[in-house]
Image 1 (cartoon, rainbow, N blue to C red):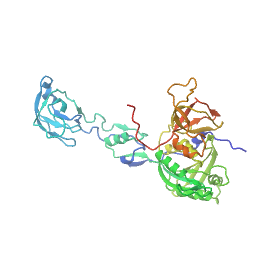
Image 2: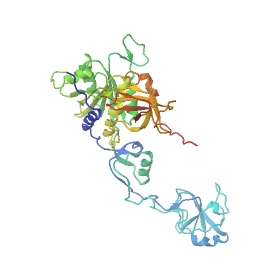
Image 3: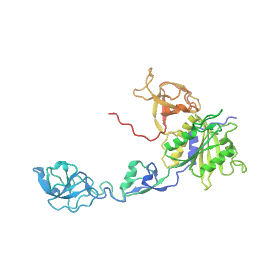
Image 4: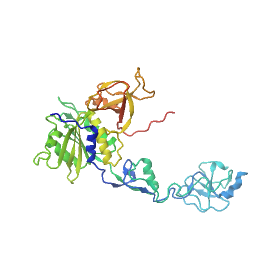
Length: 451
């Protein structure tokens, strides 16, 4: 009897239901970038912490230079105020040369820009006198203490993802540490007796192990910490032992291979041994396999393994073919990592981060009854554009001429997104609109805007 397939969104909900954000930890700001706050951050000091100059120029009493509106006013220069120093008081009818960000002297209430004097900007000793050629009013070119943030003001809310600007803001209000959800630690376990180390000579029947490197890279690109990377033999006992060892340093285990119905699929065999006290699963490995209505990636697995410290570490089992690994990671593992890391899940209904929509530049077949995810690249519009398609639309085509074949690993670097074809379709025609799921990538410089 054929087992019914589970809709992808239902399977994802099942996986996520067993996960909760990791327990918060206190970290220094230097290690907080990219993490999720679990507390509100309030200012311990005002910003700015003291009244300071917004310009390079001369600190004055505005009343002393009021006449500069009609004629230059000359004042003796009583001293220099570099940033980071505490100046002496300003006496009446004098000026002090002051730098941007330097503390305003007591008695001063305005700053005259150096451009509004007879002095040249730049390095050098302070002049004996300065000729002021523009009047100012109290507060001109001055930043008042606390005008940005006052003591006790809320600066960041719990749930904020700490970008560089947020970390900087926390530091500016006197914080050195914050409470955050830590990065999930991910252990990778690959199975397959046919796997050989990358770069080794291949014996008959073997293939290079690309999945361990693919999974390790995807873990890093999704902001998690890579724990151990292990390879298990194709037996349930060997897989169980590898999972137990990997669980010691992991918050999530991700496996590849062995989840289908073959005679030597270890994940499936280990799932079947669940509950057998004298079997390879024992009482600490609980796995299950399902068929999910997606292509590629129909066979999937999930469960838990108990670590030596008593934690139940979740396990997500992916198929062994590399394109299936990429699709399954993007649509299932990535949302799981987001849940563990405390992120609000802002995903499309099939798990991946919704990127945009595009038009199909070529047609292809799709298996009715299964949601298809096709690695695609952006291309030029077809010469014969279908009627009714808007100008300026993005166009995509499969990154490999064979489409979504689960073994087409060498074509993956050309993929820029995953195109989603819903389960009620049996194909895509030129001009059809497709949802796109973003693929992860290493952090890099932002593109320069067009000049």
